[in-house]
Length: 365
Ligand code: GLY
Image 1 (cartoon, helix red, strand yellow):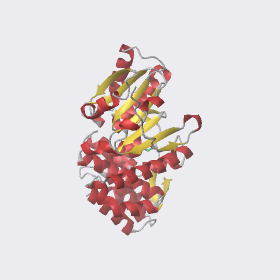
Image 2 (tube, rainbow, N blue to C red):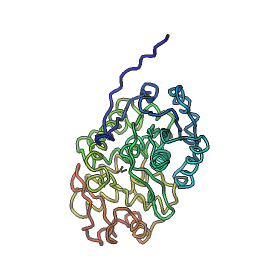
Image 3 (tube, rainbow, N blue to C red):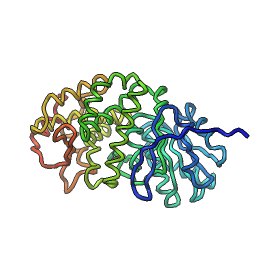
Image 4 (cartoon, rainbow, N blue to C red):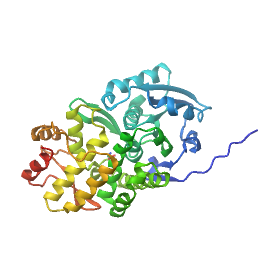
């Protein structure tokens, strides 16, 4: 009998007691990750989308020979991150008679991951799921930490649940088939970790940004690993975002307003977060908390990555205020923002001069 020996992969761990789980990170590891160890029953539903499935689905299915494997392919794009798409997953689960021991596997970017996790949280009141994120953005952010859900026409990610996966497999080999624009969109979330949590990582990113853009294997592996380490630490400390986890939303209040205003899918999430991050830094600078130099250094990195550093010109101050008022961080009608106090440390606050916020909202005009 041929015994296939697999190399033991090192894993980071998200420490959440009996809901702890590993994150495997490396190049071309999908076939080495012992994914079957994280499946408890015999039924598996792979959820992917139309562009990703032809590239990676077969490699995954080849790992699952001992299971009943079914699949559902969702339409691609943020505009399809809806309850209607989640229903397509339920339809398949019911048609193929999946029971409570079924495991859902998300193979795709953040949209697929968020919807699969949400379907797993709801199907028969909760079944297991595994994340196999295929984009940089989903590897460093959305696949880790259990935020799942869908958009509503009136606000992004407004319907969802905290629901942790059983494992995450982040294979940076997937990036060789990723559009440059998608790689860039992930870079804004990577830079975020330096800004909010780790000044040394920020400096390392400045020195290695071109290598990351060029998909250099060593640089990319370190960038993904350090981002996931920080995310795992933050999630372990504050799973349901009562405190420090909100720092991970740097640039997101501005960014979500941009995405909603432009129409989901027109600006990629990471592009809107890049412009939103510059707006958060701009306001932090106006408040006297950080230097203009830090703002310029961040803009320089985003430019190397091909990310926008200004919001869209067609958005008015009123557009921003109206859309930012439905953010989940709003408390008692007050807009709360994640701002930077110094490189490596953020703050969530509603205590800022609104005249300065207005100046920030007008930076593109
Ligand atoms: N994407 C931010 C978080 O997971 O909390």
